[in-house]
Length: 111
Image (cartoon, rainbow, N blue to C red):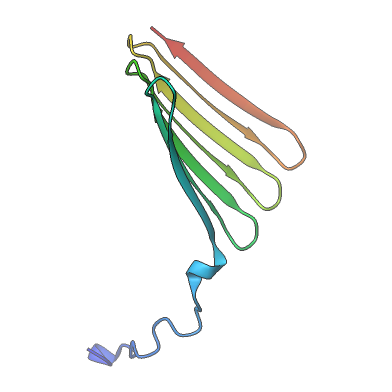
């Protein structure tokens, strides 16, 4: 398909990009609690210090929760999370903070 309809060749596709996997620091793990709950999470840090993380957990009685966050190289952060208890009650929230320290947040609880 090279030069099909006058489009350029894909011959050099990927050239000069290097090995992207060496530019990122990836961490992951899981754990089981003493009462049988489990949790797992992962984070990725990019070449300029930008970081993203996500985790989840299931409690021994059936509750579940998840959270995620990001941190920019310039110092700004954002996070959000939600949980559902074993009895059906729910809670969640989100927050942001700029590099100068100002920020805001919101949350809810129902049930």
